[in-house]
Image (tube, rainbow, N blue to C red):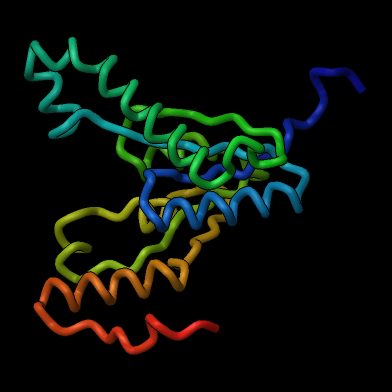
Length: 181
């Protein structure tokens, strides 16, 4: 068998945005990569404010692209640091910043049948689903590899409940705050 005949290393591609849901997905993807003996590919997809069409229409936007890309790279590095710390994920990793809409960018990168694509499957309101397309739904519908949709962590669910109560001006139940486990 020649080197060129060798199968490419298995990959676990994970979408990272910095949200709690994507950080939960990143943890799960690293665990999955360890179990499979695969490379971890965290991907942060970005697009210019207003989308690529708006950026193409504005002459000033071309000067901002390097800055937007730098900010995306910083956001990805921050997310990786928040999850893995200085020790790293303990698996081979190739972090990518990809320009484009998140769903199509992730599907484009996770293009091998042997890949596994990991996405955060956060709970979204009906209004949010109607106004903002879901990268997760796009990946589930278009990926050619298996897709693992990771539900929100229990902490994220509790934080969302507190946020809703706070936004509605309802009292928070603080009875359990003083108790220890």
